[in-house]
Length: 148
Image (cartoon, rainbow, N blue to C red; front, side, top):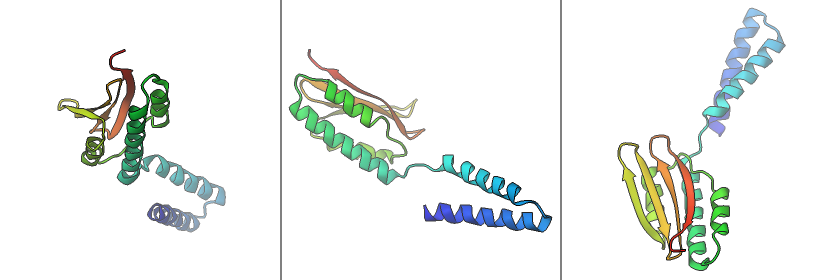
């Protein structure tokens, strides 16, 4: 964050110096500075550590639910809504977290799509998601009954 701020500050300082030398107004300077800040914001990505923290929390909560929930699937759907997406994870580290789950079932890899399908399951409920290694994001968090 400090590095990004420093970069934006340096950009604004350079723009400010260039505009002063050309005699441009403060309004033009302010608009340019704002534009530089807005352009910088969308390029900021989540860091792999925060993604892994989120995946670890998700897997821990799924393990708890799989251990106790036998008659309700709603808590699994609510959990999937709270953890709607994992972004910018280190793929190997993500898979290691899932592998350690008490209810680990399988990880299937599609080499063409570079996508991992992760499944955690009890004898009653199966929970899973897909992780796209190319775009570094998950999709299709799901929870279904196994034998109901």
